[in-house]
Length: 277
Length: 326
Image 1 (cartoon, each protein chain N blue to C red):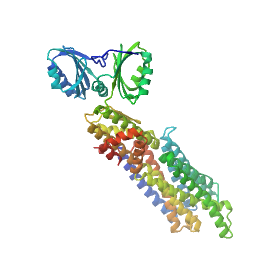
Image 2 (image 1 turned 135 degrees about the horizontal axis):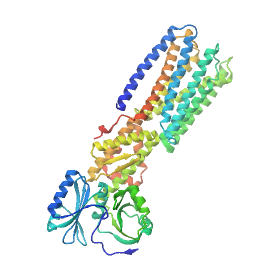
Image 3 (image 1 turned 90 degrees about the vertical axis):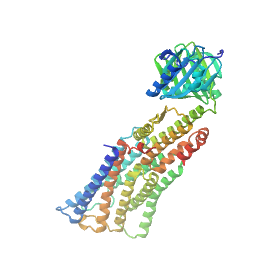
Image 4 (image 1 turned 135 degrees about the vertical axis):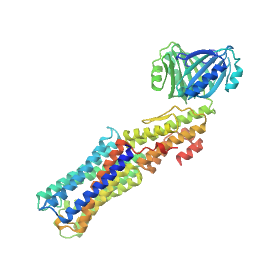
């Protein structure tokens, strides 16, 4: 079987799989068919599973490279980022089961925030690999991105604490809440930049997956921030359903993109030799 | 170092086992026909009863060139002309199968005849002699000959072209790293060393230069691609390039980051067309993986990383340059 045939079939099966998973997710979310808190538990753990699939696929990609090869580091940090998100999702799901209400800032935020650092390093290494040492501007741009998320979050926190009046949140809780959308925004911009660099090339798929993920997370952050987000499926509203489904799907898409990258490394792209004349 | 008298005949790869026979020009024609049928690459060395030498060089069954050597001259001739020069009486014929790339190097010797320098040196003095050619930036081919064998070393600006080093001994003809290792361990007492300086305007030299530049360019492209995507996908690219070349009946192969080019081109136009296909093959494959824009950037960076003289050589091939880089 040719690699192009195998890849096409993989994408077809993946799309069918994602479609089925989305329908099941939305049905559980909307109609709460299970007794008690089982609906929330299943929905919350579904994020861990989806994130874990992506992390697993990214790890497979990382393992395809020999020690010393530069893309190995890019994918190593990319996989660490995804494992960070997986751990964050899992901790959050456990807290949601064991606590009455998950606090704004919990232990789950530690791997979540840490994941952004790993993604930033991965992006940095990927940009450096593309532009080499000649394009120092690209690195400066990335450092600027980091400053936007870290210092921008600080500025946002100051503004919110100053203008927002009385709040029950601690400084750190507000800071992390502001940090997420800004970090997502930086991820989106960096991923768009890479998407433009790779164009229609197969190497850019995983970065596009991350772009979708960051956009979905941005929407989630926006809803949380605006108070429109429903913590429990039983309190659900259409906007929360949309945001959560997109969030869940984006994890699955990211996993498919990473696995496609793995297939590309295993089998190579479709041969072009016959097109040369 | 002793300057020797003029070398009248050229004995290339004389220690390598070959077929010996005697015959007339008709026998030579029959040999050529067999070579053509079987797509053989070989050197046919004829010693006429008059003491002259006729050398025919064939690649993949095609007669590349024919030379007639007297004591003092070497003339490139057609087969018909050679038959006229040769009285028709029985001559000693030595037929030696060679790798086509060795035929290519053997061609330099006859095309750039006579030797600019012919020396007798000690085996231990070979490295210092090679160093002096490097200092003089010699372009051409060296023919080393000793009791147990001989070797051809192609030099470009004094630097040995590793892919174009051939060693002929009783065990056969070896090239590249194996030949270099053998030469480095050479402890022969006396070695005759002939320097055939390249005629820089000759087609052969133009082809040699272009082949060398393309090899460097492709090494840059493949090296950069390997950095970007790792060795696994580099091997996929190498495989795709090799397939594309095979489908176009070109004896060019990619292995890792190195291009092995053993094709013998009859004209610079043929070479240009082949190199365009080579660059296009890598370009198409890389574009599929990295996107067209990045693939083009890799190719342009690889061009810019070449020495200015190498870039100038590529620019001289207007059609190739325009098609591949614009």
